[in-house]
Image (cartoon, rainbow, N blue to C red):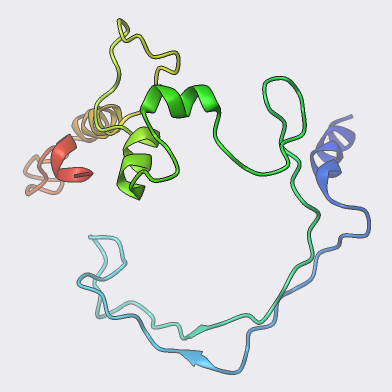
Length: 158
């Protein structure tokens, strides 16, 4: 029964699909120049192995995703709900930052907001959650990351 249930998870794959190991191209991709290294703060960057990066020259032919709207009609083109666009005061000429702020607002809308689309996530909520996790893990103490400071909404997004 468990195996059958697990197999149903894969039922979304198109007929004829299969697993194939990707082979990297011959060209080595140069290391990106970053201001910081991508490693755990407790690792010694000098002792970490250097792995050469390569591109993969693969293309895929996938069927078109057919999303559905609230009326269960197939959406022919991807677009947000009209009600949400109206609530956020957006249009096709809105700046990308305005769209980002609408999708991930800095502050959570209040329950008394007249908006029909109350956000369940915001930068404020993410910062609050991250700070609580850090406190539970004793970040900022003498033993764990003593230089840790709490995240603040404005410094994170804007």
